Image (cartoon, rainbow, N blue to C red; front, side):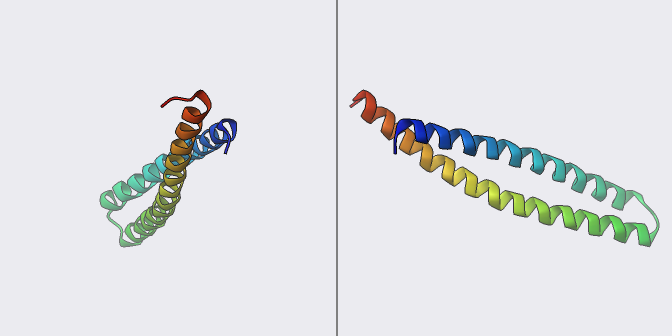
Length: 93
């Protein structure tokens, strides 16, 4: 591909990575909050409620991490293609 297309892919995947990082931070904060509330509360009903919320957010975190790893793979591929296209265009080595 051309240098411009590869630069475009790098831009798009970097934006996707930033969005995933924000989601990851949000869900990890909520999971930590529910875990803290689970340990702090005395009633069994509330403990169960916070534990289930914590488990739900952990599941979301795992889904986001899978997508995060896929985006990183694509980013690495397009980075190497960008590097090759840049060298080819400017006749470096």
